[in-house]
Image (cartoon, rainbow, N blue to C red):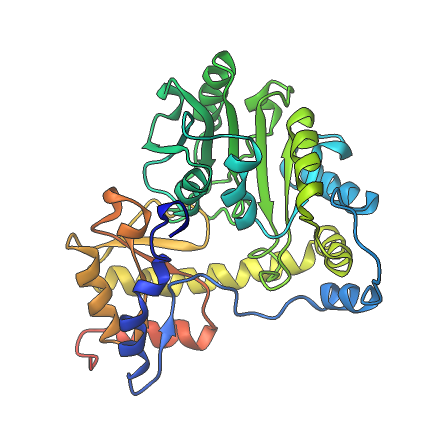
Length: 364
């Protein structure tokens, strides 16, 4: 296998998904976190209107796209960056997985990742031949060339405080380490308002040595379009752009136009947040009534849940009730007694989820 990569985690869930499908009411899949609600009409229309796109799109993104990204950063996050400090990506996962390689890291390099983390941070390090170091104190990994932050966190929903992020940035700058923050869930704050790594209260108004990554997949139901963007240190962005040009890593022109529409329209984001907020109340209440504790989960798209048993035992318990959840061990050893429950279900499935967790509800 290339770079000795692990099996794709969700493939390991297949037997439990199959068991869940046999439930008389069908399967409720809350494992992957894929959007189930319609892509906003304003976005669909922009895509259709741009469908005549015979030429190659610019890797840097067209000027109106970069301007839409910076408008959104300013309006929603209080962040000012120049247009040339924005780089569109083909979704966000490819950037997470490719960044260590694009930065030229290799066998002598280390990448600090969260102790409980989205698996692709470690996969990206492995693809470059680098070493990944799971830690709660990334600034104390002395030989790290790259530090990944993830706030709000996937899977835990935990939010880093601005003070903590500023501490990490200050120490990283002193040792010449790049800090990259995956902020794909930043508009989904529930109990706390997340702050971007790029905010001047964290950076001191200086973009040197910092990158943030954003996605429209969840906030705009745009996962099928594959659009995200990175912003931050203009020198790093320019170097990444130069490499991505060689590799043909271009966002299709119709998707660029759809992204502009999504970034400039806030009404659909408010509507989608309300859907998730309502489902979150139903799912969280059902989990707690069934004896689960929900840890962190102040923001984001997941409920990080435990009843203090091995996570695969919990996964099996859910599968018997026709529900698929993700084992916490996918995200590191410290997740071994948790499961991740996604909010990405229809309203009907949220109600059915709660019913299946009630005492006396039949299991298979």
